[in-house]
Image (cartoon, rainbow, N blue to C red; front, top):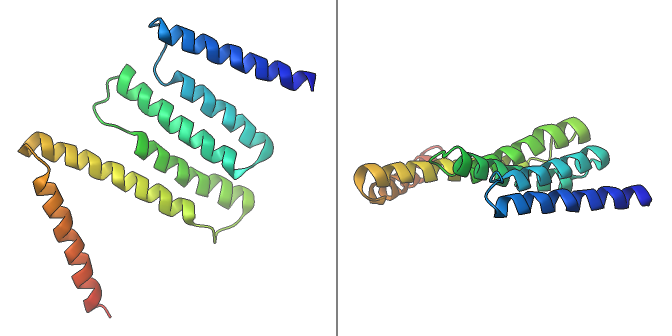
Length: 156
């Protein structure tokens, strides 16, 4: 019991110091969330619970996207991309390797959808920059959807 309180107290002190440094301009954007991701990763390694893996993935995605965007000035938003990668890792590390279940595939669908949505957002931003609007991209997506529907009826 004593050791747990020491670790909890140390965690609050570290988080407080990070927030204090960030409020006076010395902090690194995203470091707070990356440390939370590290904390939940340790908790996952100790307990092997899916929830801890998901929490670590969310905080890692948030911290890394903030770090890249605000500190290194990467011009695109990467949150959904890293979150999708986290769900893919959930499937490959936790579900396949640890649990040995290949029938549980929901993290593959969630991860793929998140990555595709982020890539579509990047393409939309590119169309806005090149052509002054995303009307062309929206129409292109509609035509791609129509093409998928029409070709699916031919295969039956």
